[in-house]
Length: 355
Image (cartoon, rainbow, N blue to C red; front, side, top):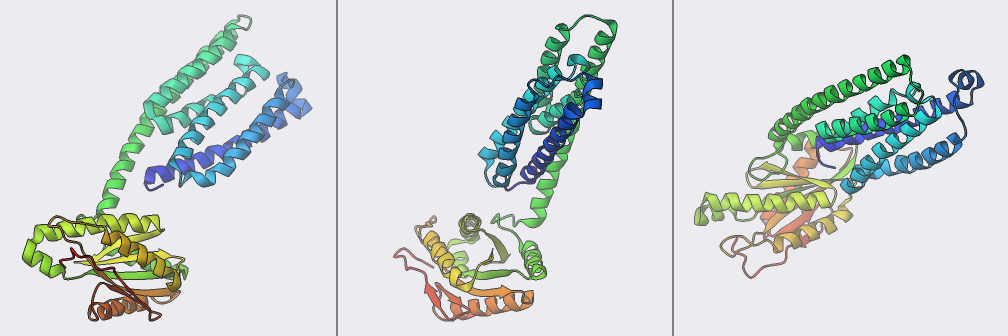
């Protein structure tokens, strides 16, 4: 997932997943530890079935959490099923543990908060209403007493207070999160191309250096870009940069990398855990996409690249080496990528190429 909200929701779901295991262990202790089970008069008749279903479901979701970050559809269904399972297990536990006087009532607050986190006010209202309805059915099936009535009304009141305040807190935090995302994008992205900016490039190189990670760096430059500005105007030049930004950004993301606007018409791409041998396939795919990019005026663009690899080397070294290779590529014919291992990959020539 690409947004801060997605990351936050993923971590939240992990927390609720571990909470389920904690409550499962606590429930087993309470139902099967004689002093506690006899004191609370717990019914264990169908409890083994509930535990079996719980362990099966929780094991599946625990395994599926690993895919949640990269699969929004799975994340959506995992969230829905999680809240539905929690609600079902909650009602089941109430029936087995004293009805309206059950010690498991506080679980309802977590269910409401869980729904509010994902669906804001609607989630808080719907979950509160569902818990209220099921709790009311259980209460109405019990013998009448003032104590039961007072306990019922107190629990329902606290439930709705927590639900409403929870929804307000979530709405406020989501608003702050959106503002944070907006300002983070302003400081990390280039406005014109949408690519990561020079500051982000330096931070990424620094991080890879600290991790002593293996990566490849592609320093690219648009061929004859000055001619575009001179003959077609700076508006066309901006259009070229915007289109290239979309192509390089999306392609880099698909191939597990990141694209940056290094400065002017010079762009950079970083691919972690890649070798120079693997760089060839990356460049060929990039050239294929660039060859299919047509701009107003019926011309295509070409780019030259300098490609260097690093594995724990100084960031200044790899950047300088890639830049030097780019310089050589520009002065040996353009429309080509010069790799550090000596290989040269040429971009297929388009008959509409005006640059």
